[in-house]
Image 1 (cartoon, one colour):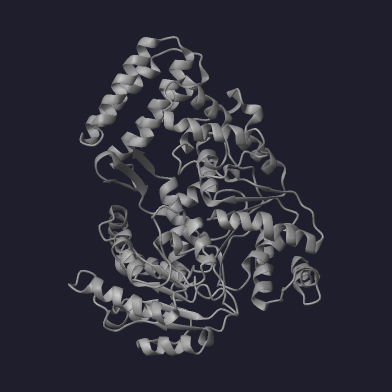
Image 2 (cartoon, helix red, strand yellow):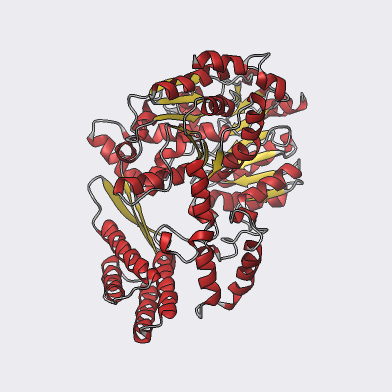
Length: 616
């Protein structure tokens, strides 16, 4: 029954074709929509790879709107959240004549906390430079309908006041907050509670799963079905969300909040003086003291705060937060079974982390236990035609599989360039040759390029050299502008070159001639000195596997597929994918990597690249 209804909606003479300009029925899109509808109706899990151009957004929105179920659609990027909420869903609802209640729910850091804004503005601890931007937020809040910080005309986190006007889960007072009735986050959650379809993100979904598993309440309501788009990055997010991050900022924010709360309460000025003094000593030693010493100092500080009896809600919450940070110290000092801990950064940026070695069991424990169907979608799940790697990392070995190829004609729309004599990193002339090759490619394409680097070090070394030598605007990630601002500049300056790292490898859509070549500096293997990777490789070997074959290579291939996938975004697009890594000819894994690239001709001669562009 559901499949007949789906086919009618997607038919050439159906409501989508009648109401949506440019809509064209696609066989693969209809098949995917039917598979999703079946999974929702039967309650089973589905992992589906729908390559670029399949139209997976409509393929899951139609079943979600027609199923009669309460559905969560979760994405990895804010850009896709906004696209779904403000463009796709209104258009689809109008087209099919459905008017189901829809809500957008973002993470805590996207909403103003009126209580913390008021605390910041009235605190004696407020630095003078914060006063002006905080007053701007206060004026904006008086007219804002939803308290969503995206409505500000500046980024409060880039201004350095984000932590003062938002509340983490540990900082939030919930129903005891004096501003609870005016809380934008609580209003957004209530809308989600009442909605039939909720648009959210993976980070919020994982945070909710952790809260529910611990019996600490919930962020999201219960759902009949979950649709997780851009789900290839879920294991990496799970490693972060179900791990521990211990930084100087985490300690400093607690100390600052404690000082403000003690000021407000006003009952023990001596405690305020002692805590302030001990806190300054701890922060001063962060850069040099060992972890055990910092942990001892922290426990002494928290003991001072927790032994103080108070009815002040903020202080009680801070006592709980202090105890939780004690647990963080313990987790990085003595990791639990199945976890690995490490230190990174130097001086005041030193931080300790602990993370699960294997994300599959963690996701199974926290997320897949919900009594609902899960539909996971991505354009790049498979490696060499197999779902085995992603299913292992997700912990969903029994999920049904589906694959739908791209409708694009890569044979005529694209060319892949892989040079045979590009020096490997570390060679004396490697950087010089890289700049020379990139410059030649960019002259052939007349700019109009993404240059994607596998490390910030390479970006910082090569990006400025391209900026100096090319006649077109060269935009470099990390030089002041945000990711979204850089993308907007790139779209506006149609001959420009954008140099970026991993945040530009996925979730970026620039159709048309503005993007005509994607250059990737080398295979995106994870750094070999990554402690989490080392632990995962060891675990794999202990289980009888091969670390490189089973972990490093599949993950590099998946990232590479995301990177080259930035190029061809429509049937009219045309361009070159350049991977400047000669190991794809000389190493045993090279042929397998090539098999995972789009089915476009592969060449090793720059002249062929020039001819390709001259034929435009």
